[in-house]
Image (cartoon, rainbow, N blue to C red; front, side, top):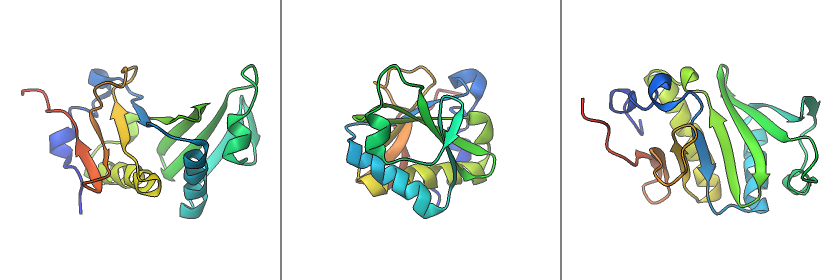
Length: 162
């Protein structure tokens, strides 16, 4: 079943209107939640690459990544739930799982369905919302996200008047 219809949300996925790299996050996270996401990536067989700076390394446990010194190379995890759709997870803090997506890779109903499935998989695993805001947004007004109670991805704002 489709969570969102492309015609209802295409305005959000126009990079010129919202920025090309929206911010996605799971609030009120923990090291355990980070580990659950890392385990999910491996279990689902999603293509991934873990890097510290520009050095590619084996995927460590979440506790190892999150306990790195502040002045160490910035770690990130590139995940591809499908070819040509990239999510980049940034390990800034244990309390919030955050990642970026490229809206240019999410165009049309088929890709929107993949995105909804990806967000829902994370939200279901953590039993927490997964929220998306425009690039550089302050997080106070997410546009869409996985709703735990509804068990699906929903719009969280009204679309602009056409």
